[in-house]
Image 1 (cartoon, rainbow, N blue to C red):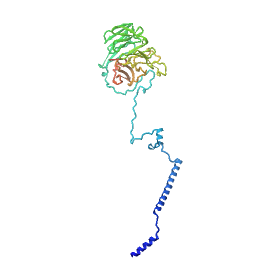
Image 2 (cartoon, one colour):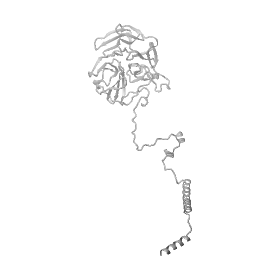
Image 3 (cartoon, helix red, strand yellow):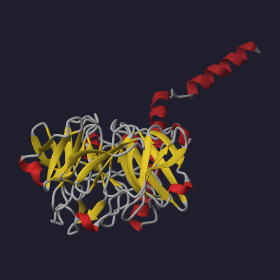
Amino acid sequence: MTDRLREALRDLADSVEPADLYDRAVHRSRRIARREATIGTGVALAAIVLLASGLWRLPEGKTKEPPYALRSAATATTAPASPRPPATTHRVPAPTHRASASAAAKRHKNQPQVAPTTASPRSRSLADLPGHIFYQQAGADPDVVRLSPGGGGVETVLPKAPSPVGISPDGHIIAYAEGGALLVEHAGGPPEQLATGVSTDDQPPAWSPDGDRLLVESGSAPAVLEVGSGTLTPLAGPLADGQHFRWSGDGSALVYATSFCSLKVAAGGSDTSVPVLGDRQPADNPDGLAACKPTSVDATGGRVTVPLQSTGETGADGPDTADAVVDTATGQVVALPVTGSVVGTSFDPAGRLLVRSRHGDVTTLSLFAPDGKLLVQATEPARLRGLDLLAYTR
């Protein structure tokens, strides 16, 4: 049985030819490659047909810039790529805008600028407001009234003043002219005569910061009066034509008005004009602003309080109460950070600024430090509403 099986296997082996498996594998591989090439060509033709027909478009609203990772160096040079967006998007709140001098609403003619307040005062108590505030009635022969916030008292210190008055830096002496004589009163005492031949038409009595001198008008020209001796020394040079002189708080500068309602600053031997105010060229003074009566100056002469007027007006045409603050270097009206309308401004000798503003039936007193910080903001006593702000002293 075994021998027959072996013979059959030998006969089968002799009838089978040898097969080359390598050739078969190569042939099969080429057949698959031809089939894939045919499919790829068909896909490419289909894509071309879609592009040509316009059926394939970018979704509306999407950028046509290449993806960030695929932008070339040339693209980055001509149009810098935006940074990658963060993984999460945070909503950024809208910024809060604060009004400033440049952003304040445009003024019309001689209306001073007002900027909304953004600061909180250290105190809202009238008792915390230092010094003395002086007021006067409008019209001829006004009563002069003093508010002493620390004590809360309001008193009349000079009834029926016969001329414009000057309040001493400490708030205890009042100077005025009567019958051609310069008189002073000490805290309600009897008047004392200091000099004769004095007028206050173009120069209300203006005290020096130390209280030793007074600027007055003598013989139709400004002059300095020594309080102790009564000696009068007329001002010379360009100052001789000035009016409404005011000393800076440190005594280093004089700010005064010209006859055509512009301002000048005399300091360190020089006499400098304040830009803008009084200039009749619309290109240089588009609002047509003028200042005929400076009323107080800060510590160094950098800022002055004035009642704003229009070019063409004279000192007699305008009010006596300052409602604006002017930068003497630029001539620009300073935007005051209070609400309501400004009805009075005054510097004390230390450079603190008192602003009187009115909103409806309420009048507010705001005191600012020389660096602009809001120190006190309090409601003014209602009985003072009909009076004009005259001065703020120590």
